[in-house]
Image (cartoon, rainbow, N blue to C red; front, side, top):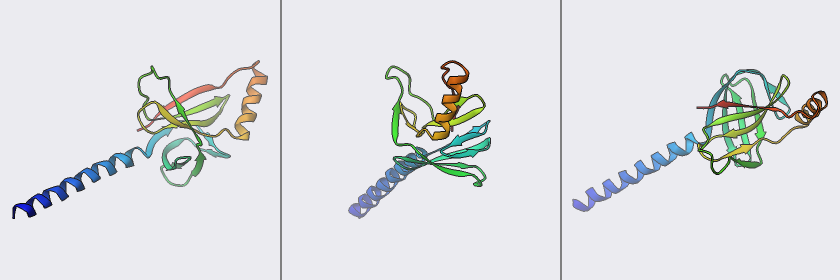
Amino acid sequence: MRKQLFATLATLSILCALTIVSVQAQSRTRIRAHIPFDFQVGEKTLPAGDYTVKRLSANALLVESASGEQSVIAQASRSVESNVNAKPSTEKMVFRQYGDQYFLAQVWMIRGNAGRAINMTDAERKAADNLKLAQNGAKPQIVEISAR
């Protein structure tokens, strides 16, 4: 009887621990944010609204509107780190702004010092070149949107 009780408690403890780990892993693979402007991911322009970003793999993120009508897969082949002396970053989406054009640049899904950088597209390179020419070497504005 005592062995059976111990085995049952051990099994329940393991199941509880696995559930906690699973819930934590799920929360770190998805963020939600309200984006107040149209923006570009890859070659696709997405309208302002509520979006979910979900990690598909180490190098790919799915950016999807809350309605599910708009979606695009973003290639995020490199990680970016914040300053080692900085406090841990919050979940956020970072955009580069060139005039009235916004391009998704980074996604920070886990509180900490590392995020994923979105690959720059030809359209963004062209917008950057146009800004530099128009404003004597100007750099893009960085816009951060907090996620939850």
